[in-house]
Image (tube, rainbow, N blue to C red; front, side, top):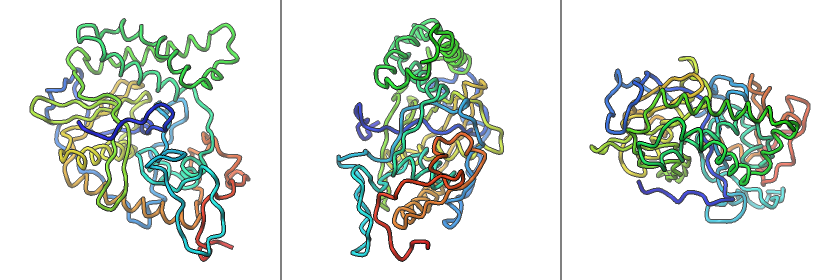
Length: 375
């Protein structure tokens, strides 16, 4: 599958999406050629109206201990490059100078879309202000598990075993530390290594559970950790990283995403469905092929959830993304990024900057429309 080049080291990448679910459970040990239909596709939910997109309900609240891992995501590089966002031009009345490094959003990924729907101010902190966030054991464990599952497919099929996967863990952890030295702080107060050993054991258990859900000796992924990017007719650029793409001999495509948390309850599965149909839309726009199946593998609870999209689903999610992007563009131009308090606020790294907690956001680094300022 031809796609945009994967970001090089040092460039921001799309992170693995938020926890969520799909629909019907898939059988264990499903291989790439075995893309049988499930019990029938379930219609994707209709998008929220444009006026309600900014406050659409997020996925089920999850504490950081259940968050999924992945690489750091940002919608466009921080500095320079062909994808660097330019400050929004709002005419001669714009008075705020643009801070060096600040960029208006130029693309959208599943996680950042979910951020805006969850809390517009959180989106601003991550995409525009680029405020630092503390690494967590849970997210880092997810990143490590993803790396092991990716690298396992480097081995011949017969050697893709549980012992081989466990052997990969120490080396992948060392590589992760080398790439992100700040992660060493997670275990700085652990001189005997007990916490680190327990943490690695938890990662090992997640990897081992994967073998009860899929049989890697029967899988030959077409792509792993695939960076994809597509531009819609409207000019909106969508991007993300897909954990795995399987292609059957008949050409049918399956998109697979690993989750290190637990599968959500049925009433909270729309969030994951949104993420996966986002990926399906990008693949469809790139290759003009609708993926036959979307599959989420939940290592935390040992469940596999699937969804079989149809064209109407993808057109609905495209309309939803366009409405969402309009809301983001309006907030960017006006500087109106309102917090949306939810249960998720308890796990936010930015409480000191949030008005809901008595904090003050940083000075907005982009020009604003004077007529839209609140006074």
